[in-house]
Every structure is written in C-alpha cells, then in structure tokens.
Image (cartoon, rainbow, N blue to C red):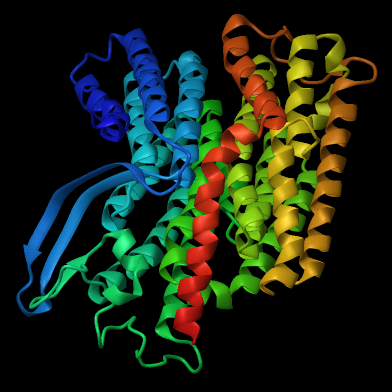
Length: 531
C-alpha cells in the first residue's frame, strides 16, 4: 500500500475535485475537508502500525519522475522518492493532528468557503509532501506549493492589514526559497548517482548527496574545488545559503519580522498551521539537508548557529514581554522557543538533537493551543489587547483552565510537553563544550535567561488578564465560556500536552535512533572532509 502517497494526495486530489462543486454548496466544503482530515488520521494509524523503532528510512516509495538527456552535461534524473524516519514521522504525525484541529477551527469561516477550503486542502498535501520527500527537487516543489495557499489565506481571509502581512510573508519566504534553489542547482551539477559509470547521471536524491563518493571530480563542490572569497570553500558558502534560507522560515533573528505581522493578521486556523507546522520547516531543513550534505561546514559554523539561536531566544522573549497584543506575544514566544531548537541542533550531541526534534513537536501542539485560545477571545470581543481584560477566570472558568495548561506547558514546567525538549537541549548544550567543543558553555548558561523571561511574560499575562476584579474594556460581544466545538479543538491538544509531558518515551522511541545516526554521520563525514 502506498500509505505516504495517500497521505499526500488525498487532500490534493480532493481539492481538485472540489473545484467542480458549485460555490453555492458552501457547507459541503467544510464537511469534505473534515472527511479528508479524518481519512488522514486513519492512514497515519496504519503507518504507525507498520513503523518500527529500529531507525533508518521506512515505508519507502520510489518512482522515476523526470529523465532528461542534456548531452555533454549528462543525464538529469529526478524521482518521486518519499520515506519516513524518526524526524519526518514525528513531523508528519504532528501535521495530521494539527491539520485536523485547524479544519475544525475553520468551521466558522463564512467568506468564500469554497476558495478557503480548496486552498487549505492544497496546503495540507504540500506540508506532508515536504516532510516526506527525499528528492531535493521534489521537496522544493512541495515547499513552494505551501507559499501560494498561505499567501492567499492570509491576504483574503486575514485582518485589517492582511495585504501588508501576506506580501511581507511572501517576499521573505520567496527570498529563502531562492537561496535554497541556488544550492539545489549547484548540487545537481556536482552530484551523480552511485551507479554512474561511463556517463554521468545527475541526481537530486538527498541520500546520494550525503555520500562523499558521489561528488563529481572537478565539480564546484568536490573536495579539490577552488577556494572562493579568501579562506572559505564553496561548500561553506553553500551551507550558509541553505542556513539563511531555512532560518527565514524558522524564523530566527534578524529574519523574523514577517512572523508577528503574519500571525496578527492571519485568521485563527491559519495562525495555528503557521506556528505549529510551517515554522518547523526551518529546523527540519537544517536537519534533513544542510547538516547531512555539508557536515564540514556545519561543524565549522556550529558556533554561529548556536549564537543565532541564543539571540533569538533572548530577543524573542524580550519582545514577548513588551507585547500588548496577546497574539503578538504568542508570536514572539515562538521566535524564542524556536531559538532553543537552533541551540540544540548547534550542539551536535545526541541529547541536543533529540531535544530539538522533541521541542519542534511539543511546540507545535502548544502553539496551536495558544493561538486557538487567542482566537476564542477575539471571536467574542474583537479585541486582543492584554490591558483591556481583567478577572476573566471568574467569568470563563473552562477557558481559563485551558489557558493555564497552555501557558505552563510553554513555560516548560515538568509534567507538560514543553519540559522534556528544553531539558534535553540544555543537556546537549552543556555537554557540547566538553564532548565535541562546538559551542561554549556560556551560550547554554545565557540561554537559561529565556526560561526566566518566558515565565515573566506568561505569569504577567495570567495575573493581568485572569485574576483581580473583573473588567473588560471595548467589549463588542458576549463573554461566554467555551462551546462544544471549542472543547472539541482544545481538549485533544490539552491531553496531548499532558501525555507527551508525562510519557515522553512514546515519542523518544522514534526520535532517538534518528538523532544517534545523525550525530554519528555528521562527525564521520565532517572530519573526513576537514582532514
């Protein structure tokens, strides 16, 4: 059974068929989207039943896709090549879960339902396809397919400044995509299939790119390539281009400015997808492509990667602390938390990488819950300003309980999903200076300020909005507690936050084999290139 293809193409195929349905049948589109998400959950359960904990790529699907004879340049080959390992499985599972929640959250969309749900289904397939692809060209196609749906979903269904936010999102993401494309083309020139004998056959196969024996002699990226721009080899510049391209998506400082605007103006379901899934492609791209293909450059620039993570941690937390808009506060907290992911990757230790992937997963669940809760309040009052609320716990008790769970989880308190990832990242960061010498101990020590600042802005928000005498300014609606649809969205997320906080081994069983293999291959290949 082509289970991965089903996950990818059920939503895309359904979107194409939905185009044939009349727009007058508006309610049918949300039912179709919900049915697709439920079908994906069933397919995911079948995948989990067949996946084992041994590591490596599993459920491989490989079909010839493109074959072009370029004469003296050789033969160009690209494949439909998808598979799962511990990294991609955790992200695919997160995607299926979050996309189901986002579909339920979209139930209240009234404007042009046909267009909205068609774009949502295309975005669904592109996200899962990107996490599964092991052909770099295929990944890039899926990666770009996410750009247009998000642009229109923000630009048409967003807030007052939706055009500004969508254009800013588009331009930043397009810049990152161009940098990534430059490296893809260069790799195409420089990498051949292992079966190449009398004629060079160029490949986009990511696994072939990991193997140094597949570099073409005299190519731009070969070991004896000419040094460019002083002491930096072309491999180092290629790594930097990939690094910048992916951290724009993460996003890390100073490429983060598109994120708060996009979150504030995007409709709630799109904010959920953006924070929980699309931000993960920055770290995923580093772990899947940049580090394994350029291990020597990754080792060389590890200090720089760690510093970028540290700056994002502190800067994001300080901006969250000064934010007056609840959604903007959550957006900047995402910048800070994804900085921890960068720090874990930079440590290049099994603990650090495992913690980074766990943090990606847990942040996806927690950020989805946070943005849904912000959306609940905005739907009732049309206002997200923190200073306009006080004493909400006395009027919205269930809502306040979910807010406390989400805030405490995001703070990384023990027993919640956010705890394990951050603890392992710190273990890896502190060990890095003595185990491999890649990042200094002072970075790990300074990063703890992010935890203190995180506690400060969340506790300040709780005290300001939920306790004290009840007071609400500029109310345009009725402050009622959660309804059945909102319970349906928030309860599974709250349970997931608790389950993965109390029983982290359920996820670590999948991540640990990937992290161990990742670190071993990084240093084995990296030291071979360096020496």
